[in-house]
Amino acid sequence: MIVRTVLGDIDPAELGQTLCHEHLFTNPPAWATHEDSDMVLHNVDNAVSELDDFMAVGGGAVIEMTTADYGRNAEKLLAAASRTAVHVVSASGYQKGIYYPDSVETESVDELAQRFVEDVTVGIDGTTARAGVIKYGTCRTDRIRDDEEKVQKATAQAHLATGAPISTHCQAGTLGTVQVAGFEDHGVDPNRVLIGHVDRNLDYDYIRTLAGTGVWLGFDHWTKPKYPSDDIRISFVEKLFDEGFTKIMVSGDLGRPSYQPSYGGTPGFAGLTTQVQGRMNDKLIHQLFVVNPSQFFAFEPVGSR
Ligand SMILES: [Zn+2]
Image (cartoon, rainbow, N blue to C red; front, top):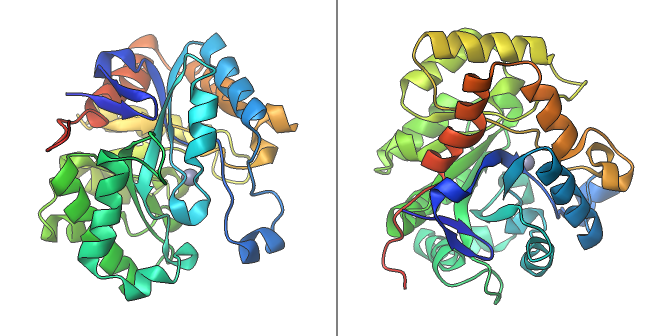
């Protein structure tokens, strides 16, 4: 089993303390950045600074969840990763329907899947950086759009062809159970899926139902003042653990300049880590930050060199 970083495959035990859903470089479509200027992360020096700050508080790895439709930049990921000891994992797949390129409409499911497979097995955008996870997301809170259903099928195919795990975006934390059902219809084991942003929707019954399907849960919106407080997150994580649901990972999804100190923002990867870890016991922290990511992001590469 390996974890596939942009600089190469590593032993899962080398990951260390891992943030399961972060961003170092983003560049969403122009219509989106026109409405909201706080969306673009572009600076390699700033990324290195974030990663080094994270390392200084014990950080080992960052799963960089920016996809092609949100401005993923493999060259910059390689440049940043080569200047720090923190491992960086990049993502294939797409973010969500509103950001899809026009090609999603014209390409077949097989063509989309093939593109994702090549990200994982060959390299992203002609670089040596290979993706270690495949992202999937939905942009509505009531139903999955038709184009997103098409991409979900392609995501499942690419996962089955490569072994790379699937990590999702749930709009405001919703539709997690619908996403799981779709993946199961396409033959994906829920144990290979991380449902993201569930802590945007802190309804215990919903999250417990989701946990019962066998998926992993992303509590990946800690520290953000505009969303429910970390007190609720902690009580939910502890309650889930008490009930035997321990497949949980942590992150901040700090994909804006205003969240990263190198751009003048807060709290950054390091600030998030110290804030979260200061509030839970060591055993819990070790499982959330180290043990769980080393299990979930590990895979046996299928048909690769
Ligand atoms: Zn994100």
